[in-house]
Amino acid sequence: MTGCATTSNDPLESVNRGVYKFNDVTDRALIKPVATAYKTVTPSPVRKGFSNFFNNLGSITSVVNNILQLKFANAFTEAGRFVINSTFGIAGFIDVAGMDNVPVHNEDFGQTLGHWGVGNGPYLVLPFLGPSTLRDTTGLVVDRVTTDPITYTHNIGEIRLHNQLRAAQLIDKRAQLLDATDLLGTASLDPYAFTRDAYLQKRASDVQDGLVPIDLLDGSFEPADEDMETPVAEN
Image (cartoon, rainbow, N blue to C red):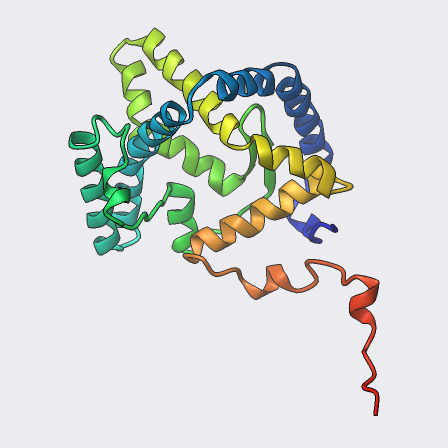
């Protein structure tokens, strides 16, 4: 598989590759083994419950950013999901709203900035957090400070609880990505470029509610040799 040609969005590539290498080494030595052990010893329903819990906390961010994008119906839906799952779903551990087919409308402040025309800025690889852009990093900081309930535990002095929740959130997210990262290592000759291009396309799609701008698709993949051959019809 060949990655997309988006190096124009990566003026800091040499620095980013260094951070990417640091993240990869740290992941292989510490985070991935812990996530693998967590996935191995923890029953699937329990893992699903923790994932639901953290997703439910994220609904607050989605509500605010849907409002900022004037998507009021989506904001109402996300608020409904949060109320239903926080009550009937036992603090969000059970996705009752999902069982009722209530749609998910995830939004963050990076998407909000993109919705109102703010460009990506340079591509960045953040220590421990991975791929981002200047716009998305700004959005992440704003979301963490303003609408993230886990940050609130830190603000009220519950430092230990805050750190435990952050660690659990990291391990939960890493456990969900175990299969994807294993595939990445075998599917791409350059995992860094593949990850960068996949991230930029996904974020462009997120901003446009599922649509990918045509300029990101043009020349994204080089056709295989067999695709270049035009079959000749036999008479």
